[in-house]
Image (cartoon, rainbow over all chains, first blue to last red):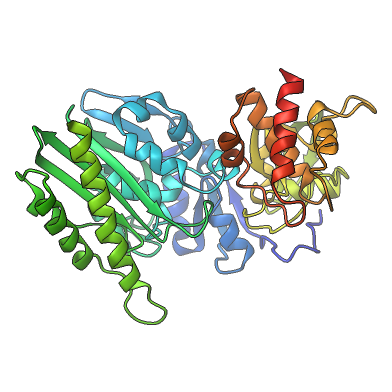
Length: 295
Length: 153
């Protein structure tokens, strides 16, 4: 059968595999290694196959594996399957109640059509420095669940991203889901994001969670997108804020620290100086509104 | 690879290559050319169809992933020669100029109104931000969605 040869973008041929169990998928991915790509929602992979930047000889479609989609509340927290679609995060009452920053981040991804296809696992494994769900999940101490030839293991999401497009996944391993420890009741979060237009990939994003007691930040997470080769936390800001009252002096000091700690590209057409100023503003905006929310 | 899907209410079987896209299946094999090929990379929404009732991009879906699914295209909306209320509203509001983006807009509008029969203007603009129009502009499109919503309530 012909594919549309008038297309400027054509998906090159590949051998197709549709495993129906995690074990089968792992076996295929181990066998074909770098020649294989795992397919979930396809909103990143298909585009890369069309523009020719990626030509896998084998495509392993994970969507026929049962049990990898869904959002559940467990004793320890919330577990989210890798095949859960972004749109499902956006619509989930449970996510809205327990992980509101993740829900807001999900809403900012692409269009409705993209979010109906794209999956959480795909957003994480694509490992873009701008991955919105990755940034939000870093602010919730998420843990990645991985299955491979050696069995199952967990990787804190903080150590999952190794560079643009690179993750801690070894040959044959797949991400089956993430789990998030139940956030303390007094956790307040904020999601901030700047992009050129609403559909665009983030120029810079920030997910903040603060455990707030009587105006004092008992603990906090500051996770950033598109300020480094991977989504990253600014742990020096977290350490500074810990135990402090969120007054103006503290907020300005934290903002200054953040704008120095992010690691945007400084060479070429860098927008580093711009991002450092936005980072400062983001921290002021987020912490001011968090401090006010509790009054 | 053998697949079966329900397109605009009719069950159809095909033998497709793994790299066949749903868009190519609709346009080339079924001559359903109402669904347009625009950017090909998920930016423009011209290829929007409904899969199991949800708006998705036919240019980014492998045909094999439509196996067993229900797919609705612009051709399935009208009842005989009677346009669907959404189509009529786009005509009445002058929300169509060159028309290339229109099938995608109308399918997104269908998904929106099925989900939310009384959307606000902000909700309409948010929902349709994955559909690009390069000639009419968006004001009349938003008006058309509001008019369709009213007609369908």
